[in-house]
Image (cartoon, rainbow, N blue to C red; front, side, top):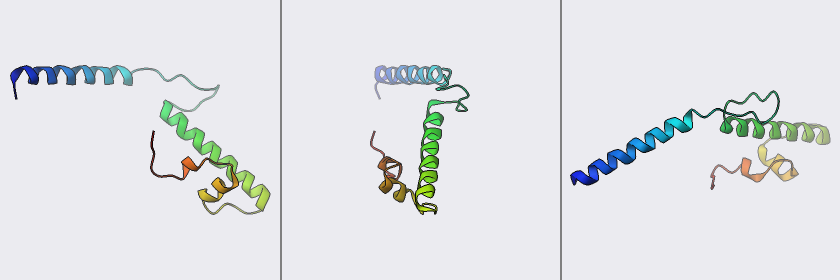
Length: 90
């Protein structure tokens, strides 16, 4: 590898690493009072869990039995189909 390109690659890697460290140090701002999450991804995961729990309770109230799968909750319309799709396209 040419020395000039090697140094450029090292510089780019150093900048990316420094940017990652700075990004990792940003503080999480709670989404609502009493928010137990410590990061944005954790807040999203907890939000999905709350949605599925509410949908399960609603299903139980309507059908007098628990849902057997997430697909049943999706068919009922309480949960988005994205929850059961293992392949994420974002």
